[in-house]
Amino acid sequence: QRGDYAHFMEKEIFEQPAALENTMRGRFAADGSTTQFGGLNLSADELRQVDRLLLCACGTAWHACLVAKHLIERFAGLPVEVDYASEFRYRNAPLSPRTLCVVMSQSGETIDTLAALREAQRKGHRVLAITNVVGSTIAREADGGIYQHAGPEIGVASTKAFTSQLLVGAMLALHLARLRSLSFNDGADYVAALRAVPQLVRQALEQAPHIAQIAARYVQAADMLFLGRLALFPIALEGALKLKEISYIHAEGYPAAELKHGPIALISEACPSVFFVTRGELFSKVLSSMQEVKARRGKIIAICTTGLELPADLADEVIRIPDCHEAVLPIVATIPVQLLSYYMARELGCDVDKPRNLAKSVTVE
Ligand code: M6R
Image (cartoon, rainbow, N blue to C red):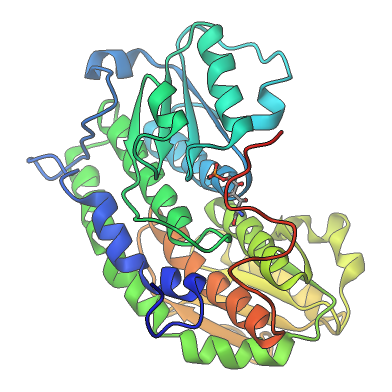
């Protein structure tokens, strides 16, 4: 039941604080510095033997894998490869014996992801599955895994399942990191950041009325660019996918610095850009990408962490999100792009919960 919400997608966007609580429940170790999972079926020693990960998924789940790669490499120091499940199953990927394969699928029924799982197992690898549906085919065939516990998702465009995949990825990164070199204190800070996620998401959701107004001003856009760096590049991809899926506005996601290598040709008043702006070493680089857009009369919507000063007149719209630990920033930064796509599609009168040509789970090749 969708209650007072206009669509299941809207309900599922606003359910995210509760869904994220459920994803974390019972999964913190007693010492407060790491996460624990009941179903990995791998001992700590076996996990220490792993020297590389391969993550496979489709669509939105593939974006979640890209964020997980960033965090696992950053905090656990393990090299990670991310592949589209549909490509992995047909390319002859050389996998070293100590590679751990992980497939990610909200539904647990996506045929390409299932085929990737079987292909990895055929080559002698243990495969873990991150899924939201208990007892799904992928969950049953995997050698172990982590359930997302986000609750059923009805809207075809994934929202709460995506943020719970991001959270599972962040929790797995911490787990692997604490079996390697991450210190107790850094682990404890990471745990505190994870525990804060539902509240941070609640704060981000408070921007909904402001985002609805912005959405109304941009529905005439012919194309839209989403630009972010590092762990927010996959969120740029996700923002573009979400907008395409439900509003049919053409959109693309890029790392902001790639603008000048091609996409800048699209910039005009009819092609607004959404930039993720956060503090850190790349702040000034993102500002200069924004200036390149501004110089070509492109409109800019900045999704910017609190406390950051943007130069006057650079952004046409500013959406604030709370500043937070880099392990959870991708989750918090997802909220405004979900809301923006949702309100734009609604403004255009689109059938948000059942977009044309799409199915909730893709069980054909
Ligand atoms: O159930 P899965 O996570 O395996 O689904 C993968 C994709 O089909 C799915 O994420 C798709 O991209 C969604 N429509 C995204 O909103």
